[in-house]
Length: 291
Image (cartoon, rainbow, N blue to C red; front, side):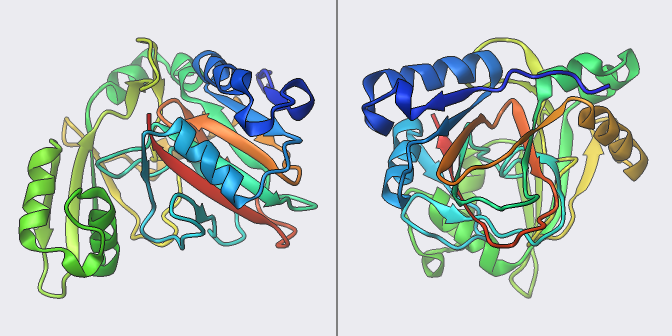
């Protein structure tokens, strides 16, 4: 049985000042604190206005190195046509964004709904054995091509802005700055990357309530599929991923996009995904960062 979910829609008619309305930001933050997400509808923003929302919410903007940029703060979402499993954005990176925003410039006529799932609700549905297992720390390991890891580092390291500037000194500085990550560099320039994280966590937006918020159920579009291992040395199996996926689906809900909608998610609490795309005539953009 699917569990009901409150559907937050903040409408332009209630905030006549538009995306810069003084009361809108406060209401967005209230919705994020209470439910972990909200939807802005009827504001009819352009790309510049969407970028303004991102920079207002995020003190520091981050990117996916495999995506193309649309502005200095936003990127285009292009992940094929198939369904996308639930995940937090950039969940397997050392600096996971606190906030993720999506802008449906042109919504699909059919399909392509964004799925959302509150990790706190998933965690509450775990049995005692699952809670004990997922309370452990987890290590993510994958091989990254040289072009991708250098693009990521060029964005995240404060001293550089171009992948061509990356040196081993920058790699070592970034490793020292953020704990729980390690790497092995290969002759072809690729890098085996390991990150140890908490698959169950409290929200970065506040509060002590924990939720199942990670990328275990998600895709590997543009990347090698990662290997997940728990602190006790056991690997996360396809069977247990499927078991959690089925459980999460019962508490997963859909955003049925309209042109101009902006969705804002607490990326440290609410996982998201996508139904299959039936109408490829859609344009979706993303902006994300830390609060």
